Every structure is written in structure tokens, then in C-alpha cells.
Amino acid sequence: MAAAATIPRRQTPRKRAASSWWVAVAGCLALAALSLLIARQATYDPTAWLIWGREIVHGDLSTTSGPSWKPLPIVVTAPAALLGDAAQAQLWLVVARAGSLAAVGLAYRLAWRLEGAVAGVLAAAALLVSSGFTSRTFRGNSEGLLVAVAFGAIEAHLSGRRRLAFAFVVAGTLLRPELAVFAVVYGLWLVWTAPDAAGRARTLALTAGAGVLVVAAWLVPEQIGSGQLFRAASRALEPVAGSPATAAFPFLATFTNSVPALPWPLYVAGIVYVAMAVVAVRRGGDDARRARTVLALAGLATAVMILIALMAQAGFTGNIRYLTIPIALTGVVGSAGLVRLARVARARLSPRVATVAVVIGALIVLPFAVDAFSRTRTQFRGGMHESRLYAALPAAIAAAGGPKAVLRCGTPNTQPFDVQTLARALHVHQKQVGFRPVVPGTIVIRRDDARALDRRFPYRTVTGSWVIEASCRR
Image (cartoon, rainbow, N blue to C red; front, side, top):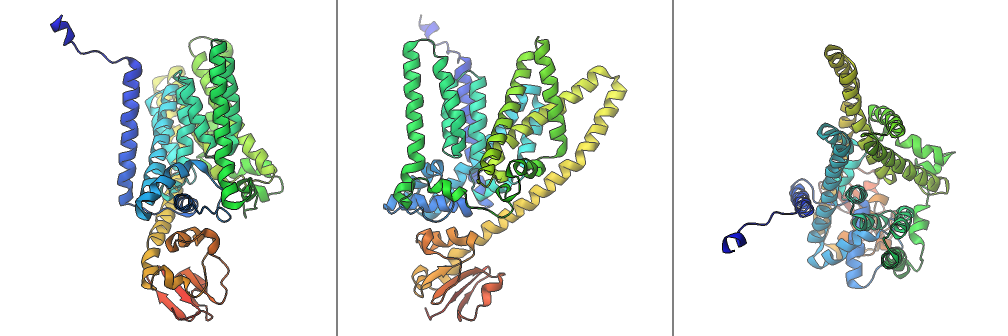
């Protein structure tokens, strides 16, 4: 008996899977922390979340200016504000970048489920080079987290962990409110498929409670911070130059604007792969289950696209970053499609002809891949330039005498997209920073801006990246 008691217990498959997922999460967090060595400064939207987190801690939340309210980041930025400005920003960047890394890993996982490891690598690469993804990751935006929770919901559902999948969907609604449509549908499906009346009652209570939480998270802070329950929606309805909402037919423009997001071969391979999946489902057999998964992923991407397009038609901007989920799903399906086409060629053609066909296909894909990589590199460099620029602002303010000196002459002004960073550096509300210079007042402007030599503001402090001009002696 004593000897038997020393035999180690084997982990169950679910415990082993849970352990591996925790290792993956820890790895993402570690890599995200290391990324701070490259850049540790958030930009426009994330800086607003940092300000709101600090204001919540201080009990003076103001959401009347800046981007739309977004609840999920505040879960991190509010408690992190207790650690000070630098630590708060770095903690959020670690979370946001870890989310992006998790999204890349989950893209690999989903494509691997369909067509194996090569498809997984292609899907991960497709997500990284999709329009703006890598740049937004380093800026601290939430699109990486959004893809991570969306793909996490899909992975949990495919693994049979339906409540975890629902939790991920709910988390997604705290980043993109339109995903509430999918949360409601999935929640009702969970209620419908519950095994008995007691289970249905518990599931209904769970889903209803989640719904109340989501609604409160979006509306209550806005009521407190701006006095308007629906300010986030009204802010999203403000026209943005070049967005689909300003086009003659916003619904169609949402689709056409998103075309450059991925290399063209992924779209072609994805369409062929979906067509093959339709045939496989009709025939039945061993491939039918995988084919249904392909159709579900393609259907989900299409549904989200149509929803965003309808919102654009109603006046919401419909920018490409709102389409991160369907773009990421398209990358997964298209990557799996490329691998499937290569396998079909090998199965139906002689070895020599199949090799030639695959090589020709690779040569066709290569220029599109190079172009996507080049575009991503340019966007990444732009993001790094902006991060370095914002990181230099506190030193410029210190050189001008500090926040009190900058504020002494009146309203501080800057470029529209620099308002959040300046407000945070000066420890004021976003509404207290303008972008139309007035006298008396102060201009905090990038050194390469034409307004950096405004004669109405003769008292200047010039640093490497910034010019601070005042209408009075500080």
C-alpha cells in the first residue's frame, strides 16, 4: 500500500491542456514585458484609457473629450494608476501586447485544427502583416486583445468549454459593443441546450447577469463622466475623413476599404477553400466535420463584416480597425486554403507536376507577401516614431518649467491627435487641452509643425522633438 501510494498520478487530458495554456499565457506576458525595451509609450486611444483610469482612482472622471469610452481597458488602467503614471502605462502595454501575442498563437491554433502546422504558421504570419495589426500592438491599442478573446471563444467552443466561450464573448463586448449581438445569440443557445430545467435557469441567470454587467459598464461611467448615457455612441457617429461613413455608399465602402488588409492570395484561397468545404459537407464522411468548422469561421467573418457595414451605413465610421476580427478570420481560412490547395495538387498530379505547380503558386504569392511585409514595416516604424516622440514630451515640459509653468499662461493647445498625451503629461482633463491656439495661452507642438513659430507666443522652449511656446513669461 505504501509503495502504491508513491506512484505519481497522471494528469487528465483537460488538466494537461489547462497547464499548457497557462504556460502559453505566461510566455505571452514575458515577451510583452520584454517589448518594453523597444517602446514603452502608448498613443492616442490608449492614453485616454490611462487618463480615465487615473481619474477614476481620484474620483473625478471626465469623458466629455477624447475617443469613445471603452470598459475593458479600464479594468487594467484604473487599479494600475495606483502605481504611478509610468508603471500604469507599462502595465497596460504589457497586457495589450500580450493579448496580441495570444491572438497570433490562437490564429496558429485555429489554422492548425484545419490543415496542420504549416497552415498555422501562415495564419500567424497573415495576422501579423494584416493592415495595422503590428503597429497598433506597439501603440497599445486593444485590437490584439479583441482578436485574442474572439479566437479564445472559438477555441473554447470547439473544445467543448461553452461557458468559457461565453465569457470570452462577453469580454469582447466590453471592447466592441456590437459584439453584444453574438453574446445574446450564444447565451440564448446555451440556455436552449441546457440539459434540464435547473440548468436552463442557472444559465439564464448567468447570461442575464452578464448582460446587465455589459450595459452598466458601457453606460454608467459615461453618465458619471459626461452626463450623457450614450456619449460613446454619439462620439462614434462623428465623421472621420476618409472613413467608409463619409462615402456615397458606406455599406459597400466598408468592404472595399478592407481589401488591402491582407495579401490577395489569401482571399482567393479562402474562397476556394470555402467552396470545397460546401462540397465536403454535402458529401459527408470524415472531412465533413472539419468542413463545417471552415464554413462556421467564414460565416462568422461574413456576419461581423455585414454588421460593421450596416453600422457604417447608419453613420458609424466603419474604419478598418473595427474589422480586425473578420480580417483575422479571413487570414486563418485563407492560410488553411493555401495548404489545402497544395495538398490537392500533390494528391491529383504526378510528383513532378505537383512540385512545379506548388513552386509556381509560391512565386505568385511571394510578391504579395513581400508587399504586405513592407507595408507592415513602414507602419511599425511610424508607430515607433510616434512612441519615441511622446516619450520625449515629459522632458520637454520639464525643460519649460514643469506642468504648472506650462499651464500658467492659459489654455494649453496642441495637435488634435496629441491632446491625450499632453493632458496626461500635464495631469489635467482632456477637455482642458485645446487644438486651436488662443491668446493668452500656450502651444505644445511638434518641432516639425508649421505652427511652431507662431509670433503670438514669443516665449519659447525648444527641445529635440517639441516646441513649447507661451504668450506670457512663465
